Amino acid sequence: MLKKAWLLALLTLAACGGGAPTDSGTEQGAATDSPASAERDPLEPELVATNAADETNAPTTDRFKLGVQYLRLSPTQPTSSNPDQVEVCEVFWYGCPHCNALDTEAKIQEFFGRSGVDAAAFKTAWDSVAVNAKLQRADELNRRYRINSVPTLVVNGKYTTDGPMAGSYEALLALTDELVAAERESR
Image (cartoon, rainbow, N blue to C red; front, top):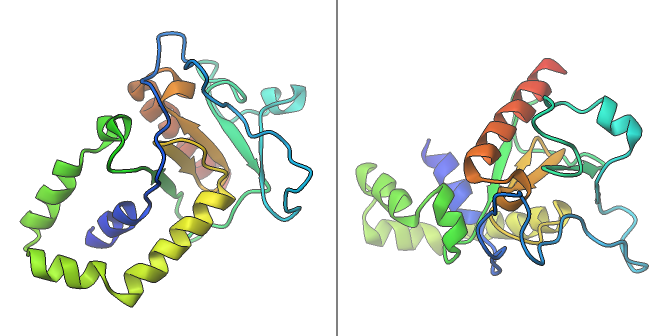
C-alpha cells in the first residue's frame, strides 16, 4: 500500500487542467484530443477520438462514448503492473484544486502519518536516487500518455479520461470502473 501511495505522490504535473466539470461534460477551452504535429515522434502514441468501428467495439455501456468521455491511446502503452492486473494511473498535481476533488494532499499526509513516516524519513526518501528515478519515469509517462491537463486517469495504458470529459468526478469513477471491467474481461 505504501508503494502505491508513493507512486501516486510521484506522478505530478506543473499544470492544472482548468475549471471544474460542467453539467454538459465539457469545459470552456478544454482540449479533448491532441492536435497532430508535423514534428511528432512517430513512436509516441496519439490520442484517438473515435471512428464508426471504434463506437461499435467500445468497451463501455451506452452511458459513456469513446471520443466524448474518454479517448484511446494508440498504440497502447506498456504498464508497470503484472500482466494479470489492470493498471489505473492517476496523473495529478498537488497544487490543482480539481485534483484535490479526487484525492486531497491532506489525505496523503494522513496516510503517511498513520504509517509511521516522520518528516526526516520522508525528506530522506524524497531526496533519494530511487525517487529521482521514479520522477524521471513519471515525466516519461506524462509524455507517452499525452497528458495535457490534470487530473487525468489512464486505464491500462490504453484509455485516458478526466473529470470534464466524463462530466463529473462521480461519472469519472464510474467510467473508470467500466473500463477496468472491460479490460479484465478481455484477458
